[in-house]
Length: 152
Image (tube, rainbow, N blue to C red; front, side):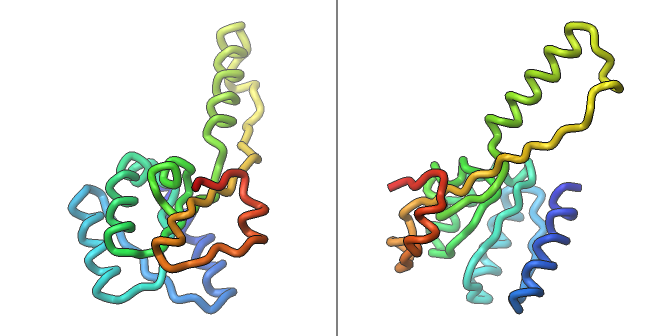
């Protein structure tokens, strides 16, 4: 599962910074709500939302709950930021779709799928929403300067 492999990388990064992580497993809307209740009860400082497909399809609910609970959240997909989320760092989905279209075209022209090289999107984007102000936070100018997109 994607979220599990992503979790291993996040755990390693957190250890290197001395950050304590708590993982929540949500497989439906009520699981997301339970996770946010726990986040509030434990007075957690921030939230990292996996780029998992299930969570992407529930991004509106997650962004809304993060806003209501005033928990700064970082996401793995830009759509959350356009919906009011604080920030995202992840794959440029448009580039993924472009590559998928190229592959589809090659297959439709007769190339064997097994002969095509495995590709991975290498372009990632950092998006920041100025909702930081609502959270009482200031995003450093250096970070704003490196963002691919800043939403006011």
